[in-house]
Length: 184
Image (cartoon, rainbow, N blue to C red; front, side, top):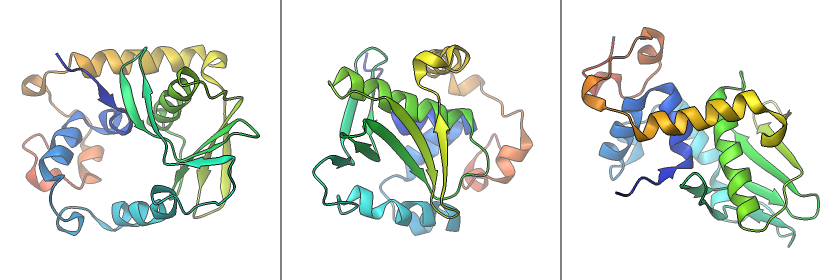
């Protein structure tokens, strides 16, 4: 059984497990057909990282594919500064540092370390307001690591047929709610 999880799906699962299903369903279509302005702006904001044009400095690695064997997670990092040993995840705008943000950057950190890249510092960067949020390293945040591991366990045992969304506010902010039979 292939149980590898995409790192981006950690945050999606926290928001709503059904969003992963719809993301895969619509994945081959033009994003304009199903994404709203915030999602399109977020994609555009990551463009220079995804294309590798963020920096020409050799110590700055961008859009590096990573794999964490311990948790069977795969994805890409935004930015890793090899000189400073800093991992940075960029978001269009951070209003709240959600657990899913922690999970994504922890997965990236653990994968980088397994691949031989030391990580001494983790940051989340909010592009719209130029704010940087210092995130404790995984080994310094036992509570969040337990939540991280529990989320991975929940993802692997998730049963879509028995899922009911209990938070109607999430449905109100979900781009997939018009197509979702679980929307409240």
